[in-house]
Length: 315
Ligand SMILES: [Zn+2]
Image 1 (cartoon, rainbow, N blue to C red):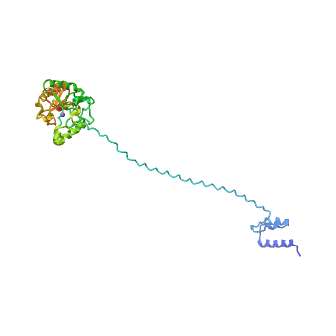
Image 2: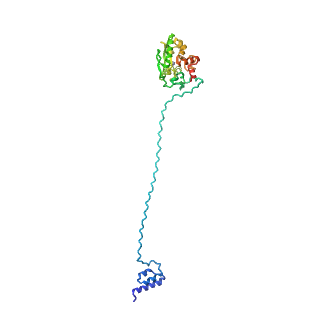
Image 3: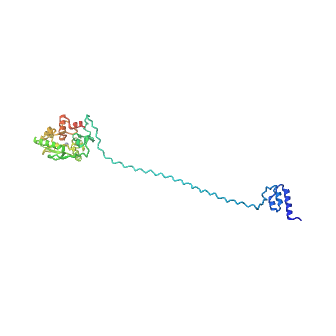
């Protein structure tokens, strides 16, 4: 009987014959016979199934260093677009308080035709309304002075009847009154300076008395009166009634004397007979005189013009 080793060899040989060229190294290893190694290495068997290599220490698979998972870059939170501030609601600016502008002065038309006054009633600021321009200040049914016009040098007339007048007219007024009294025609003041407010009352008085149409011919509207200039006086006879109560005050002693001599003292009649109301804009008023100074009065007297016509040429 054969030994187990011999029996094994026989089996291996048989297998070799069957399988051909292929031998397994596992056999050689497992075989203690060193000759088997040389023999089997000639044609290594491609089959790995039979390979049993116990000596092969498995290479430690390097622990894969885990690739650090890249920290996800935080997606930048889109900055919220700033909400557009709502446009401030514009509060409508309060309408500026409009200061009433004085009437626009009409450009002087030197040498031009005198504006008609009949039926024409306007409120145009006269060109020369400064207190220092008193000699050329023109007021009529069109031109006026501001409502605030109040001469700063008002003084008492010093005559019976009282009233006030600009101080620059006082000396000539006194001389004239003395001359009239000396001639047997003493004067008295019926009305002198009248403020704008007083003129409002005066005009309304005449409107209530005779109606607006008649009042417009007999009384100046506020701002249009020579009385507001502090340069006009309505005279009457000393101790007499109101001058407009006479049929024609010029036929009285005082009225007659004034018609003949007033200009010599710087006073001129504003609304003479024959020029009223077509030129002067008012009815004939033999009692109403305006102070313009002796030189101007003499010039007006010599020209034959009414005060309105003359002053117009001075604008
Ligand atoms: Zn008057």
